[in-house]
Length: 271
Image 1: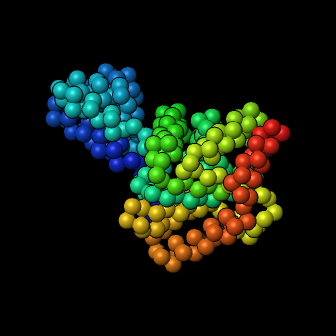
Image 2 (image 1 turned 30 degrees about the vertical axis):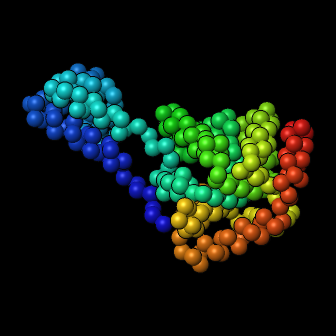
Image 3 (image 1 turned 60 degrees about the vertical axis):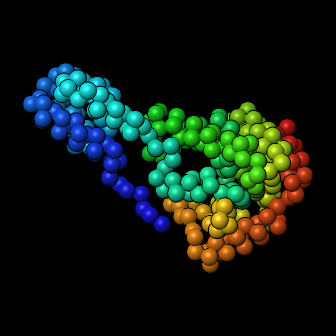
């Protein structure tokens, strides 16, 4: 498992360095750039040193002052927030290529089944707080992931969700009702199955965290699990086997697909 880099993003550092190099090559002082942008000296220095993300205003004015002919301004495309946290990007790639995905979630509705409303509530309440641009990018990325349910009808998607996740009231009563109805609609797709694990069943495994099993076109198997700020994508056969057995035991204790449909529908009416 790779730890998340605590340094500023490489794109910030590279872009800031390019601004500094172009400025020095053009014989423009930092003070002159500050005057044109209206930014304080230390603010521009932080951007040039990669400690802060260079702003669009800085790129526009620096590009013009240094006669960069759009080369500095073009960097804005590389400064957009990452659609997924660094720790989960490898998993997202594996998910996009998988021919079969089976997951278990104890506390949250799986990302592939979330409504925009539900996803936005979760992402916007992250800690430390995310800026609005990052929230928007990650919400949109999650919604784009969900297109696979319909766009890839030959891929098997199996979801087992612990009852507690259906009762969390994320976003409030109305939002949760809409979320449950959305799950029922997704479960109606012929390549998607949704099952509920009732509270009190298989408690030893039910409360041990989420897991996802993946099979790629080469029929290689992977397993992914995640807790708080830590996650891991496993390829070791022994570890994959262990998590596959855990998932199998959980699914064995879950309600059938039809029973789950009735359970979710009744709960949505009761909210």
